[in-house]
Image (cartoon, rainbow, N blue to C red; front, side, top):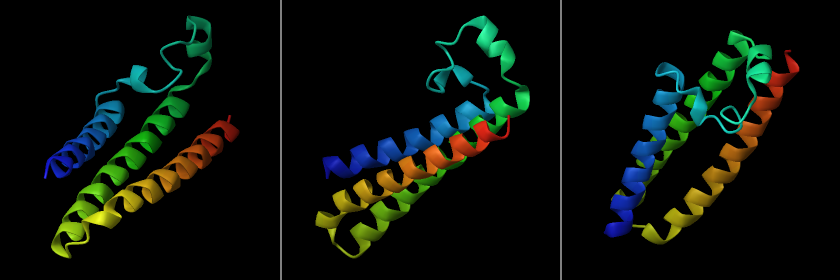
Length: 109
């Protein structure tokens, strides 16, 4: 019961942070951006930054919605014991997609 509430909150936080990074322009939530020097930040074009933030929004919101749907599906079919495997598989796929998107954006420089 408590784990379901925790996963629900985490899923909603993923969606929230994905929206905040892109639409709220909170680029300091992007790993490494807030530790860059001012000279390095000036080298980054606005298109690159919005591309990274859009990719993060898509991945975070997608993962959050996928976990929400998965939580309700696993509850509906009463197969709770497999939900942890679902989380691990989706996190692995998310990490691979994140790396591919970041490399694709960086290649366009």
